[in-house]
Image 1 (cartoon, rainbow, N blue to C red):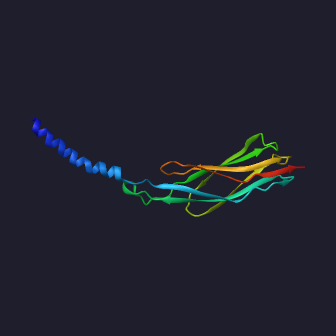
Image 2 (cartoon, rainbow, N blue to C red):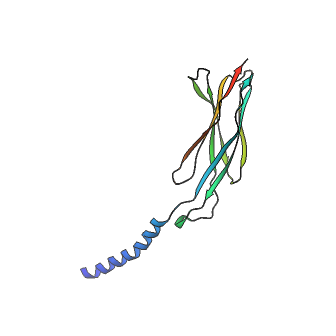
Image 3 (tube, rainbow, N blue to C red):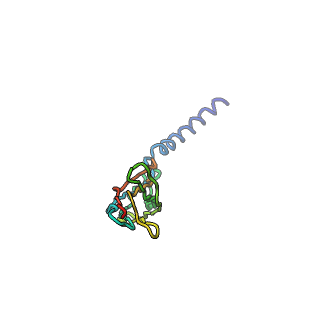
Length: 155
């Protein structure tokens, strides 16, 4: 009886080895990455009521290979836009506004973000934008771009 089970075990191993190889040999899952560029830096000046930045983004899709092969569509990626303020001493910083923008296509999409002073006041000191997102790749790569700082003088 012991001799009858050994060939069965070897038979099962022989059948499982190709399956294990298939699973371990699959090369990659589908990936969606966001390419983002700031196209217009925020502008400061004297007596500024609002600052704006323009940027464009597009998705870059790579189908998976091996077992994960797909002809699917890119997954949308949402970027978080943060408007930052810094005082003239450059010792104090604060997030003034946060918004999310979702990119869904592989063609360039132009968009913008505006920070407006509270009613009856003007912007003063330094303002800039940080945009961050996470690519949908194997490493879930976090990404960040930052604009130049715009100086708003006040009166």
